[in-house]
Length: 367
Image (cartoon, rainbow, N blue to C red):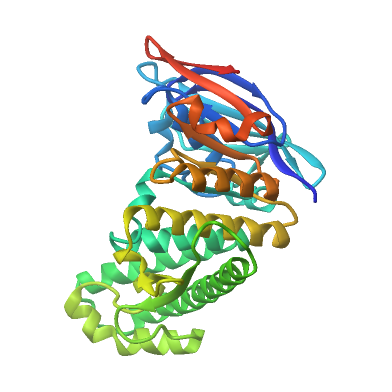
């Protein structure tokens, strides 16, 4: 199968890294070092090679190395489906993030055509027990991995909804002000719902086809009140009919922004929110692996995986099983941990990197 991996990564004034360069091959990348050394900063840099705000959802100015705040730059040599691309991502002092692919200016969404990047970070460990917004974001990241245009539909929907919500808060009752906005919300909202359902179907298929040490999650898209209208016309009618109720609430109460991802530990029939911490982590790992397997078929190569502190809540047997699955998949998985012993089972199947902090600067060394 063709590969998808970074063969080189250069960081300049990015977070704690004043200057760092890594020469890489397609194997997994095991990064160890003490807390605060700058391991996650490397994963965040790699996450920017996909559309969106990255794994921390940070603004461009927040990524600049301090105290200088001179701006920052990342350069990656991406091997994608037998083609080589040079990707430059940077932000001048206080400016928005910019992207250049093979020497030409490009929008962030263009990255979705040549790369797929998935991640699992510690803040996601509470996914099943916190609010629906985080689960929607998690689902949308997976959906975007299959359908990069999903990001544009989501942005267009959010923009139209913000305008509609402003009218609702201002108690504007003239229907003519709402018609165009509701038409836009219906068009993009139906697309969002269709994309999400298709992604869930691919994830379920990828889980059911695999023999894995990680538990299978049954997934369902639910809506807090009633059912999500399936078609554009149904959603447009629902928005119109809900207008007076929305005026009372001061916000839009119908649409894909009200959806939630419901998960069940299939073997036990237990809702994911009621599972143990270890089981919840294992379910998340299972979903990321299923997403990666489905993408390997859909895109033509397994995605780049970013697994921050992946060993947390996994016992030694499951940790070894995870490494075996990553290597069998052929994914370049960037993994972090506090000690090199956490990656012993990988041996020479991975590239090993140590990150150490020295007077406010992160030093990166291949070991």
